[in-house]
Image (cartoon, rainbow, N blue to C red):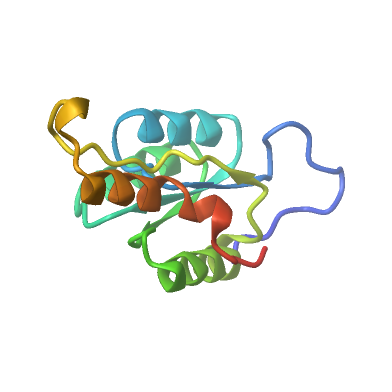
Length: 134
């Protein structure tokens, strides 16, 4: 677990722990970069990307901010709890949660069926609604 000094107390984003679901690419990756640059320790959640999270974590390390990558399917409540537990054990309790995970069905919205819409909702809502303990 990464230790942070207890004094002086954290200011701004320094010494904070952030979890960025969907943080391996795109907007999530840029949010993670900004948090790391501001001094936060960042956990990057991804679903099956192999290289992107590790490239991102290497950039965090170069800038002096440690981080971890967590491969987890956020549509699975057990995976959400496991992610919360892993982040807490590895880098500390989550101070900042960026609800960035998302899914796009790849068809015009008029053609989105109920299953695709429900999957979208499952992906975007579990970090907030799952019973993950801090």
